[in-house]
Image 1 (cartoon, helix red, strand yellow):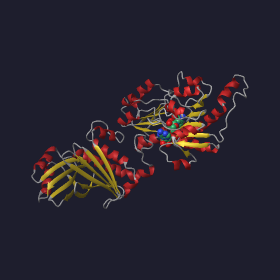
Image 2 (cartoon, helix red, strand yellow):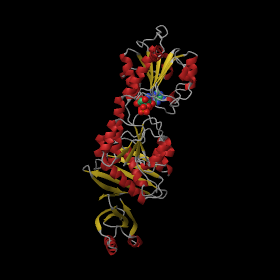
Image 3 (tube, protein in one colour):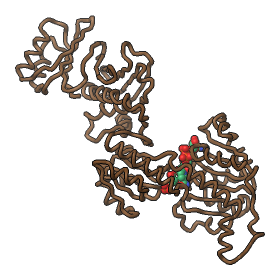
Image 4 (cartoon, protein in one colour):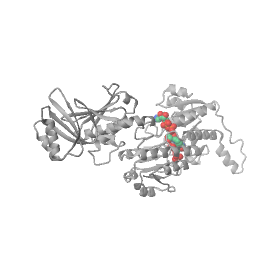
Length: 525
Ligand SMILES: NC(=O)c1ccc[n+]([C@@H]2O[C@H](COP(=O)([O-])OP(=O)(O)OC[C@H]3O[C@@H](n4cnc5c(N)ncnc54)[C@H](O)[C@@H]3O)[C@@H](O)[C@H]2O)c1
Ligand SMILES: O=C(O)[C@H](O)COP(=O)(O)O
């Protein structure tokens, strides 16, 4: 496995990657877009900060790429949609640089309030301007925080310790949760109208892009000072420039920009705006934290298949991993059985029952059923990341249901495939925490192993049928490893016959032609 690191990495992360057996690491010095394009096809993983853009074009030309790691929070420099379509995971390290970004915000707020950068510059130029740099205290000033996530809540904590009054707006946080942080939750308009300092801490989404624009800036308190240490796109920079120029906005502190680095931005010329070149996460501690986190996540994924902090796949907590493992195997085999038996499928219904499955994350299991189903059918590479997209592309409707009870089992997965003319359902369970069993096919109850090469035979329940199956397979040198039978009250029966070797088409054809036999299907699990 080869890992490419594009934006450098703290030594602590490099040593984790280098110590992992089977992983080779390359760290070119600040490679440009063309260099990355030439190198990426040889790599299984790439790790970036915000400098490198991982575009759809790069992803499409990197057939080996399994995972894109972001040593940080924002993934807006990575085309996540293209990565998902190609089955590549995108992982970040949420929270690992939150303290650094929050402290940087506080530093910017103090620097803005007391004109520290401008005063420094003035002294460098030989002046001693005490009058020009009269500042404002933060004590009892109102700070409005838009986005009360990891960074926003640390900013709130530090601002409260400086005895600021803190307002917060976050549509995904309830007022009671904000109150626990000591923050008064208010609607956006109220926050705009009441804040002396206003700071942004949301990701860049279709909802938040240009959240500060001409209309919203016009609703802010005259003299407001604005801070952005989140994402450049959250502020319409031209509108901010106009409001700074006409004096409605009293000052701004910017760590992030619509274009990085900013080119010819008029903001750079304004005396009441201070800047840092996207330094929020640039502390030794934050870089060690993000490097340690992403390196561990990449090693765990490449070597052991453990998925954490993927933005395009649900995480499995380490404490759930051992318990979910046999259910993942069961899910994949049930999906694979369906993929080999039922075509064309219009609707897929997955039902999770039993106490085990009440505690485990079900989305990874659903993705795994779909992967199992599509793998035998599609030529392209199907994995847990792109499986749901591929199902959608094939217009297959997906319905998942959970039930707390499972008759006699602690965890049962039932998968039903509905085609225009028929339905086929198969259910399985995990016994004693590790044994995988097929427990139902349509209305037939049984307890068969769910692995290897199997013949699935439906027949009329007449004497001699089992003998016929044994003789036919024997005459083609196919040995039966074991056999499970089940019948319904309506004189029909089903047999699951595990074979040591594949049955040739002639043997299957002979069985199919016999009047006692309704259907024969060979499945490889
Ligand atoms: N300057 C830097 O170097 C630096 C460092 C780290 C993170 N960041 C950026 O800071 C931002 C916040 O990071 P985080 O780790 O706190 O993320 P987070 O996911 O923990 O928090 C984001 C919060 O924004 C809220 N939110 C989403 N839509 C919203 C809306 N329309 N209005 C108000 N709130 C909304 C979410 O509910 C969430 O609570 C991200 O953009 C991240 O990329 C920048
Ligand atoms: O989203 C982030 O983590 C920050 O923007 C930090 O970016 P950086 O790692 O490029 O400094």
